[in-house]
Image (cartoon, rainbow, N blue to C red; front, side, top):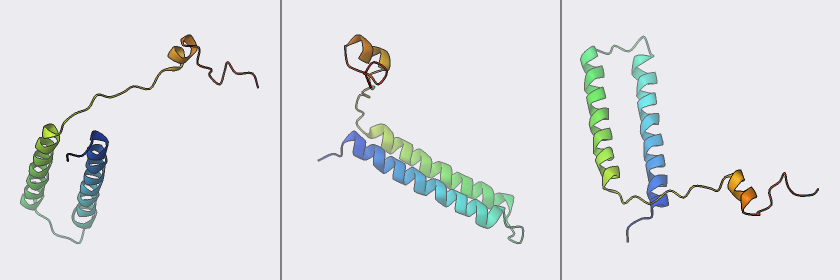
Length: 91
């Protein structure tokens, strides 16, 4: 059974958060540490790896089944439909 859109979104969130944390750790460890020698070639190679992996993940996301986004009703819609809102209730 295929995961639901909500499950896929949660998976994307976890993956992207972890991925960006890894990038941040690399930056802190290698670029922000003045005692660590890093060449432009190493930086460019690392960027190429990150871009490649993000492109792969982008393709995976594109293949996921999308679901329509249900927008929450606005306050104006609630008032016109007779649904009580906080402002219209007697306290």
